[in-house]
Every structure is written in C-alpha cells, then in structure tokens.
Length: 229
Ligand SMILES: *Cc1c(COP(=O)(O)O)cnc(C)c1O
Image (cartoon, rainbow, N blue to C red; front, top):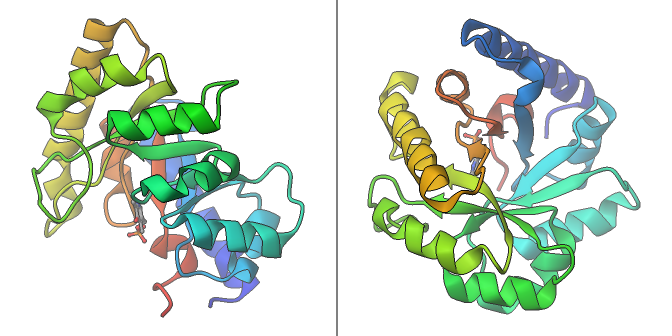
C-alpha cells in the first residue's frame, strides 16, 4: 500500500486533472463526482483517502466492502458504490451497505433490490455492455429500454454506467463514451426520466470521459497505485 501522504498527493493530482478537464469542456468541476475504486486496497488506504477529503468509494464485491466498512468503524458520511456484478444471493447485504448500485443489469435483480430496500427506492445505474463483450456484465444497449421500463417502479434509476472495451490510448475510449451519452439521451427522451448520471472513465481515460459528459468517474490506480494481491 502507498503511504497516506502519497495517497493524499495523488488524490489532489487527480482532482486537479478532473477540474482541468471539466473547464476544458466548459463544465462545472463540482458537477463531476470522483468515486475511488478501492478493490484490493486495505481499510488503511481508504482511511487515508477519507482523511484527504474523499467521501465516495467503489467496491466490486459486496463482502469485501462490508468487511472494510466494519474495519473503518463509524464514518457516517462515507458512501459506498457497488461497481462490480451483483449476485442475487448478496442482494440483501448489498441493499443495506451501498448508497448506489452501479451495475443493475436485470429485472430480477431490480425486484430483489426493491424487496430488500423499499423506502426510499435504492439509487441505481443501469450497466451497459457497450462492446457486446462476453467477458463483461451489463445489458446490451438495445435491451436498456425494456430494463428501464421494468425497473423504474422498483428502484431509483439515475442513469447509466459502462466499462468500454480496452483500447491502446485514452482516445480509443472516446467513441464508447459518446455512444453511452447518446444512448442516455435517447433513453431519457423515451422514458421521461432524467437519467442524469453517466458513470464512465477510469484511471486511463477519465479526462476523455469528462469531456464527453461523465458525471461520475471511477478511479483506482491513479490514487491508490497498482492493485494489491
Ligand atoms: C477497478 C475498477 C475501476 C477503476 O480502475 P482503475 O483503472 O484502477 O482506475 C473502475 N470501474 C470498475 C468497474 C472497476 O472494476
């Protein structure tokens, strides 16, 4: 793990890059939320980022998040996002632990989340499998309308999330980010929902994502260094 000082400095550098990208795009820097992807990082690394001002963290596994939450004690204003696939046998635990589920990809999961978390409905993003990759979760773009129609009375659908196919450079991600934004615009018109959140962009391409409309970027290595384990 990096030292607390290193994490603080790297967090500040990422924030500066977010602000600069927002200004280049004519957007307000405060309109972009930084969710720190903390998978494999120990609670001490999360604590260091928290002490440096970070409040939102993304975890890929429900139990890993719960273990870290318990180890960190009572940090009431720390918000956890689920950014990995949700298994149906973890729904209850997830509904209690996460402020937002970014990976909704089935009506069955939406119904289970609604049973576990009735009031208020749980904030979710629909995960879109932009590249049609068999290795990734998420619904095909063509299936999103149907899922939103089914899920909107069960959970609070706030927008879309995607992990584009890997590219050589950050620019390779741009067309996928444009595609996600355009899909969001079409779905918002068709559904009448705002769908204001676009969660896209990671360490290697978050600035391009901001230029293309990201409201949430999920950044791990740029702040925490290489993944552990
Ligand atoms: C790990 C992860 C990230 C962060 O990736 P980095 O390249 O470390 O910034 C973002 N989103 C998801 C879904 C992840 O699993």
